[in-house]
Amino acid sequence: MSSPYRNLHDNYVPNHWNWRELVFYAVLAGCPFLLGVIVYVSLVDKPSHELTDLGDTDRDNIQRQWDPTDDEHRRRCFANDQCRMVLAESIPLYMKYDDNATFGLPMYKVWKDLLAKATNSVDVASFYWTLTGPDIRVNSSTDQLGRDILEVFKEMPSRNVSVRVAVSSPSVAHDSTDLDVLQTKGVQVRMVNFGRLTKGILHTKLWVVDMKHIYIGSANMDWRALTQVKELGAVIYDCPLLAQDLQKIFQSYWVMGDVNASIPDPWPPSFDTSINRENPLLVNVSGVASRIYISGSPPSFCPNGRTRDLDAILSVIKEAEQFIDVAVMEYFPTSRFTKPQSYWPVLDDALKKSAFERQVPIRLLVSCGRDTDPAMLPFLKSLNDLQYPSENISIEVRLYIVPVVNQSSIPYARVNHNKYMVTDKVAYIGTSNWSADYFNTTAGIGLVVSQDSTSPASMSRTLREQMRVVFERDWNSQFAVKLSNLSHNPDCTFAGLASSNL
Ligand SMILES: *[C@@H]1O[C@H](CO)[C@@H](O)[C@H](O)[C@H]1NC(C)=O
Ligand SMILES: *[C@@H]1O[C@H](CO)[C@@H](O)[C@H](O)[C@H]1NC(C)=O
Ligand SMILES: *[C@@H]1O[C@H](CO)[C@@H](O)[C@H](O)[C@H]1NC(C)=O
Ligand SMILES: *[C@@H]1O[C@H](CO)[C@@H](O)[C@H](O)[C@H]1NC(C)=O
Ligand SMILES: *[C@@H]1O[C@H](CO)[C@@H](O)[C@H](O)[C@H]1NC(C)=O
Ligand SMILES: *[C@@H]1O[C@H](CO)[C@@H](O)[C@H](O)[C@H]1NC(C)=O
Ligand SMILES: *[C@@H]1O[C@H](CO)[C@@H](O)[C@H](O)[C@H]1NC(C)=O
Ligand SMILES: *[C@@H]1O[C@H](CO)[C@@H](O)[C@H](O)[C@H]1NC(C)=O
Ligand SMILES: *[C@@H]1O[C@H](CO)[C@@H](O)[C@H](O)[C@H]1NC(C)=O
Ligand SMILES: *[C@@H]1O[C@H](CO)[C@@H](O)[C@H](O)[C@H]1NC(C)=O
Image 1: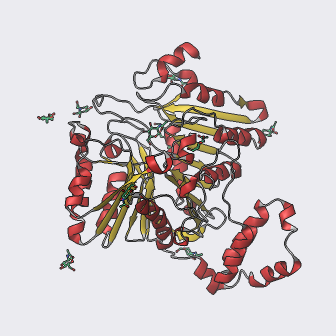
Image 2: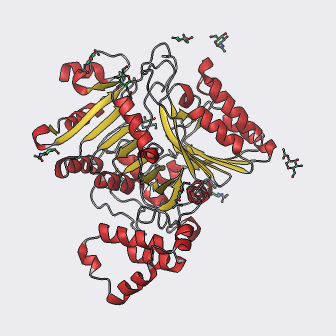
Image 3: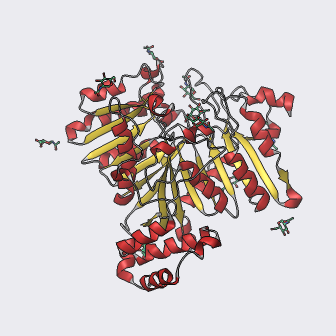
């Protein structure tokens, strides 16, 4: 049996659905609008030699089925129109932005709201849980919001809400008592041994509430994620089809949390999805027609139909025409945990190719903090050097530094933990750093949203526009520092290096 892993650098093969299969299922489902989208995507995406494979009879059939004026079918394709999406952010305490700056809703408020809505079930996947200061042996009153969230979770079973929690093994939360406390209250907990399963970790952060509301983002179940670490995520309300799809990912972790579980190959059909890059979910979100799908990693956790997270990111980069803005905590065109370390220029190449061949301006906002590995700097500098204005080639890198101020006693805090990308076409929110292991052995997910804004009013309601504003806000803030202007800054490990190197 072949290994579920492939060397992403050398023989990287995406697990695309065969587009003919998709056409077949669309016809079967009697969904001409969907079919139209699939045919369109297939035609646009595929090299022409595949098109000529389409026999005349096939073509006639498709034309007969495809009737854009068929309203009843169209409605069926645009599922639940009341889907609503909000952008959620945590901004660490004691950070001063301009008075006119705009922010997503506070992560804490959004979480509280989601939990208040729950009447039946809450499923949470997170790297680890540390919602109180003592969980990490820290005495800080800034853990108050975390404690409050833990209290709400403790009460859920008595409200008859069934709560399931999947966390990573290995974990970093050795002193945490949260999960023991929750278990005594009736919460079901499984440690998923990714160390044994993939030699990685469970790094996903997701919630599914009542099988209709979801959260995806960078924030762990950690008090620091509410007051000390900069985070970004999205909550989508009343979106059962998307929630069912995310539930499949949760369920894949849950079953792998069984003692002695081994990764099935292939996964049973109940884990398959028909919502993916080629066939996104068509939903009306806050009145804006939207195409959404959820990508996953590692590849061995991508059952049939699930777009791999790396493929999702690569396609978003490839399809951008006017700009690509990326905010990630760490960026390494190498492996980090797999030894020996290998060079892995997959994302680096994709960015440079877009900058060079299509002259798409690229901006990369990377976190720098006390714990940042200085080995990242040369890679960032090499990207940043690709600036050639007369040829319209521009890749610019800035470092985002969260001031530590008087919070230095809190470990692994004061960083820009968010992981997202916004282009002229797509909003992408992920959970992975941009380095090889995150797409090869580590479990992570991505939310990919495209929205058609036909008017300025609908434009402001799109996730893409809200994330563009957030990126612009951060890029132009006092916290984003040009590589060429790194002066001594005790809060960023690059600062000392850069003054001697640049
Ligand atoms: C991906 O993981 C496999 C198995 O753990 C490993 O052999 C391979 O080198 C990894 N690839 C990269 C680019 O790290
Ligand atoms: C906010 O105000 C600053 C000056 O304080 C100005 O430079 C900036 O353009 C304003 N931003 C927005 C989004 O209005
Ligand atoms: C935590 O800090 C507060 C005030 O900063 C202090 O009153 C309290 O005794 C401390 N608790 C522990 C366990 O150190
Ligand atoms: C929870 O369910 C039990 C048994 O069905 C019922 O007796 C109890 O009233 C319910 N509690 C709440 C808060 O709904
Ligand atoms: C797990 O595997 C071990 C060793 O193969 C075996 O002794 C044990 O009974 C297994 N446990 C379960 C629950 O299957
Ligand atoms: C989407 O919602 C808007 C506002 O509620 C409505 O006018 C529009 O018809 C809806 N579009 C679809 C395709 O359902
Ligand atoms: C660069 O972009 C400008 C404005 O879009 C265009 O006029 C110019 O021809 C471009 N130059 C090159 C070398 O592509
Ligand atoms: C840190 O400074 C803020 C105000 O700048 C203050 O409110 C807070 O109490 C200080 N915290 C500690 C632990 O010193
Ligand atoms: C990646 O992100 C995680 C948190 O999301 C962080 O703890 C870790 O240090 C980062 N860097 C690497 C190389 O994994
Ligand atoms: C460079 O950094 C200094 C202080 O760190 C700041 O005052 C100045 O505005 C920065 N210059 C640019 C061009 O960003």
